[in-house]
Image: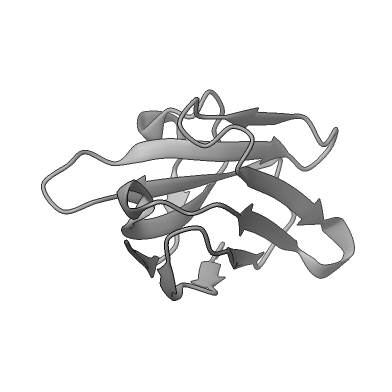
Length: 118
């Protein structure tokens, strides 16, 4: 059974950085990072094809976040720099979709909380 486990969340001041990790228990075609703030819908942040390395980013994080993969370790990372208070949310990784569409991804991790204070 495919499992995804996120880690690396925490509290940081605006302008700071965090690196999230997503460990997956089997080979995947793609992994996406999503986030959900209180009272808001879940939104796609970044995604990566584990075969080609192709990436997509939401406009709100372009130039600040970087998604990467380590195929040998079954891991996907989200490096988050220049964090803003608007980035505060629960972050989830998910498997198997594309297009930063929540409905396209079928398997989800439990989430890791990111809190950015201004």
